[in-house]
Amino acid sequence: MLSHDDVLNEFRAAGALLEGHFILSSGLRSPRYLQCARVLMDPARAARLCAALAAKVKAGGITGIDIVASPAMGGVVVGYEMARQLGVPSIFYERVDGKLALRRGFEIPAGARVLMVEDIVTTGLSSRECIAGIAADGGNTVAAACLIDRSGGKADVGVPLFALTQLDVPTYAADALPPELAAIPAIKPGSRGLAK
Image 1 (tube, rainbow, N blue to C red):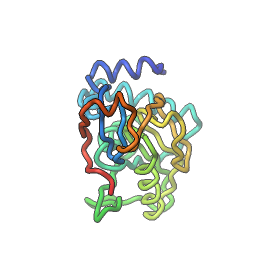
Image 2 (cartoon, helix red, strand yellow):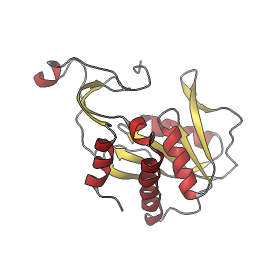
Image 3 (cartoon, helix red, strand yellow):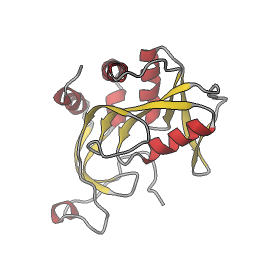
């Protein structure tokens, strides 16, 4: 198993643990940002992290997984690698007219036991949306997994959530920034536009 420090060291080594003033996809602001794409661009690092996460899911008693499903875009690579580690297929949900949906001929067999995988969980919103899509498509989400739970364990996704580690990173509304954060120009490093 990887320790908390081991996981953060992997992010630091990849230049993926950033400090500053960041606009999150939710529109909230944060002094720290985790750029998972930089961690996952190294196949060996992705394999190490996902092997440890798969072991944690199994140690938590989650077995008999039929398929891994992830929300695009952030969950695609980590979902694929988790599926590879578990020896099952991987599919992903994409936003269509503002709602997560399966495309590209992806299907979930009726009653399939699904592991929902994300890169980072902050509020759990995209996880809950993906899990709702899985249910609507006939699957049974038995657990969720992510590399880092940014909520410090506070996010409720409706199923057991396994994370390699947790961080409790404060977030702020744009009009309620602490002075030290307000003094730094904000940047938007993520891939999605701001939530409406």
